[in-house]
Length: 158
Image (cartoon, rainbow, N blue to C red; front, side, top):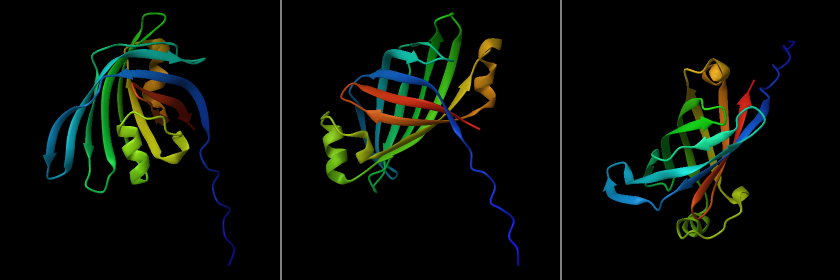
């Protein structure tokens, strides 16, 4: 029996780094799904060859920290390019790792990003013809949490 060769895997291309400034979490408490909280986005910067601009204040990240320790993330915010075009971002993902690493992150201590899992799948919406390619491309974000920021390296998947 002969086997067909495996298809080639997708590849990724670096697009930009998002440095998103955030406030401390607002805790809602626990419900049946886990600990609920909101983290306000206060601004930031987007830097890359194909996407350059600012993260506008006013967005946020609605999180549920599940009983198994996984943070289920759902962020929405706006970018404004250096040319003045606006782009809406909806970014969902997961963050989890060993309990001691996650506790250090919660306390705002520096933690090596390779010691925990933090990936997102952003979707983009815009009316700008110059950035329409964002609305028809799959993206993956490799993220890192610092004391007052979230850093996301954005990759286009092809």
